[in-house]
Length: 357
Image 1 (spheres, one colour):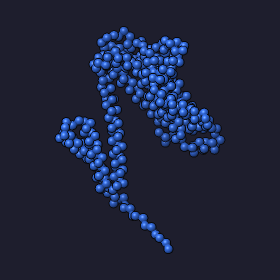
Image 2 (cartoon, one colour; image 1 turned 30 degrees about the vertical axis):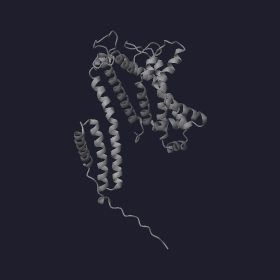
Image 3 (cartoon, helix red, strand yellow; image 1 turned 90 degrees about the vertical axis):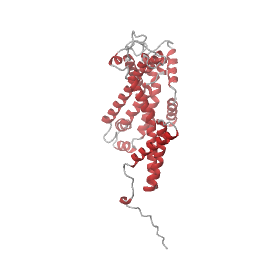
Image 4 (cartoon, helix red, strand yellow; image 1 turned 90 degrees about the horizontal axis):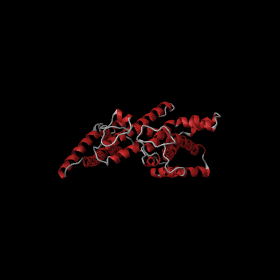
């Protein structure tokens, strides 16, 4: 005796009901209007209150309408889309507010002279002086840290993914995990105590580069390690089948394939340390002169320390010249990070293999 099972027939795609494309926008507008009216009746509406109430109404209305018209599966999909989109908008609100405020306040003092001059001979409420020496110092110290951390981080990640086995690899992995959570002030104190054995008064760009490299290395290791793990093993096996040595496979195939992700990870690590203030206060100090070209002798000014010192001199009084300089320096630091990320995108675009971006 045979039993036959019948599968439910699915409706053709042409017969499946779908909401019009403009429905989400219409629901969003309606949710905003209803939220504003409800808060207007209950109390004085605020932007935050209207946003959160409208978001809740929009998600609920989208799910109910989609379930009635399109069915439970499409309703669940639209619900997930609405929640993810709402979370993205929620995250972008403080970020957009921060960038907008820094840009608005920083442009009050921003000029070519500000980017090209130092603080030598500038005292009190004189609207002169700039952050040229701090910009050069930031690039100098960050460049030194990158020179220390990037090769060490990439080589460590290559060892862990391609060669590392046994206790040594596990010990390195544990050490990287521990270093990832080290507070920046601890890295600065470590380097300060290390060099204090030579001279307690010693400050230099080299010290700052070492302190930032301590923070930067584990980020490079982790990001590069994840990118190398994404390279398909088939590429390695094909290279080995052609008789290519393992070291050359890593250089020509693995690293070449993962160059876009590696570049992005390196830029994340640079952005992680370029704005650090506490380690630099302990290791490089500050200076009012244009630039100290020696990496191993003499103090040097950096943008994070410049922002801190100017804000402290202005006592946090909004409208004072020092606070305006601090805002302008903060805007300059954000622009530098954006430019570095743009360069990273260009590098990953032109140097990654075709079909990988």
